[in-house]
Length: 282
Image 1 (spheres, rainbow, N blue to C red):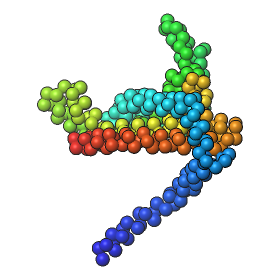
Image 2 (cartoon, helix red, strand yellow; image 1 turned 180 degrees about the vertical axis):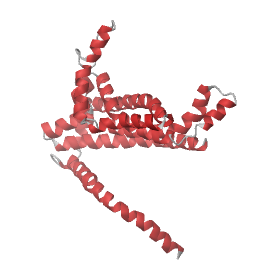
Image 3 (cartoon, rainbow, N blue to C red; image 1 turned 135 degrees about the vertical axis):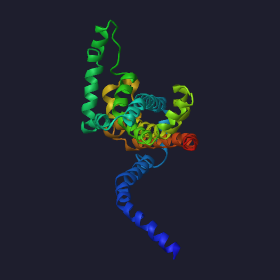
Image 4 (cartoon, rainbow, N blue to C red; image 1 turned 120 degrees about the horizontal axis):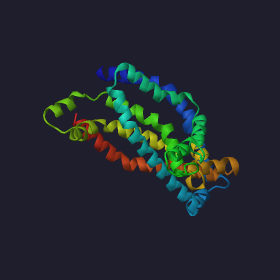
């Protein structure tokens, strides 16, 4: 009887997930399966598309650059989002509402529009370079560079880092910091040994989301970048839409997907270890 009741309790929540699972299967699993299949069958059966990918140095360079840019974007998001999320967690109700609205407002604007705004800001005669000249500095090349791409992608992905951090930081009891201070601990030591470890789950969650999203970015690198900042998504678009070579485009997508899974597999044990350490420090 106990096992039957447990089975019933388990079956109810599972049935509630069926609509979402059906949608995911329809919009993700089926197209992904088609892409994988065409990477082995188009234009002819075999692994020719994969051999072409790894035999072409440009493809490997762009793949490495994609991970490099995604890493720097993730790091910039962590550095910028951490103090902002902390301010959200300790602010009063009204100020917190304003800060949350500042995070959510970019979602109400098209990503293309936001990127075009960065084109205006980063161009050689844009607002940023005019400000630098006014301050007495020389102009900096920002548009069509990896730096410009990193800046634009960081702004777009910043909310995906702030919200997981805020969700974790809001649950941290600040009385722990007060207790450490009352016992004579230095503020820096208090932060490094108490607050930072407790906030690491939010850092890891946000960094994982941002990194994965950055790997597949297309619009921002296309509009802000140049030949030296091309990411793999741009090459995939060229193969599929411009050259109509679905096999090679599919092979690129599969390689990027497997490389992402490989990176997450390597980072997973480290993240779990740090998560247990932060959980144990509670």
